[in-house]
Length: 385
Image: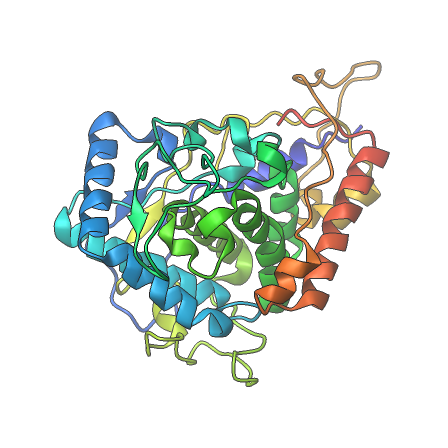
């Protein structure tokens, strides 16, 4: 009997984003020290005070407007093609670099959205103690949290807006199992990028709504939390045999390569490919809160049996792990409140088109996610997440 703990073993192997070793592709000097990006809810009170204080300063100094302007004006060059990951890694780093000029203790956190995928609106992240909840009133103004009551200046003065989908009934989004499956299956950037961009990436933007559903989404600091997490997932895929993988289309129709310049920043993509080198002097911590999360967790419990054909198709790396067998008559441990994986919310075609994104790629990503859920449910898989 094969236990889907093979999924666990492979996921745990890529969970800790340690700084890798150099090779012939690396042209940047190794960092003398690295700082660690943590999941938001794992910040200490002192760390959160540092972050929230710097955010207020950056708002007062016009940095939210500046970064929203950059993201808006370069939007078409950084989405629906392979600039997506390197641009946003460099973009988030630039935000962090500016923030650390105000306080060197600032480190950009991330939001592990897979942990909250079944009911995102109930996440502590979206509470008054952290980033604030849904917008209120006719204009859907955010009234609590770190940006509560803020007036954003880019694209005209307006309150920071959030307008959760379906009157606040967010999700389900994308399960940790599905994101792990993408990381294991995607053979190149041409496949990996749309599967992430048009699943977890897109749904968080559109379902949060308000400013987050526009090209000026940087107005909402959830953008930085979200894209730091997207960067973390890219790094995990890179460590899964794709450290220097960069292929697919560039915004101008040419084929992208490590020597292609990052949009706006005018420096080669290779400069941001390996964490711990050049300016990328950071790493990602394993999330201590994610005992229930495959991505970033090391104490996972997967207790349902996956047939070999399902395991090989959807978790090829896990299929290589020696199977766990039980004595005759023995049974695997029962699920820990196991539930079927729900179908994720789908990004509306209208939003894909309005953002100038590739509708065909989006539909392919949507079908892949549906097929995954169908395969897991048909196999009788019950998720503890």
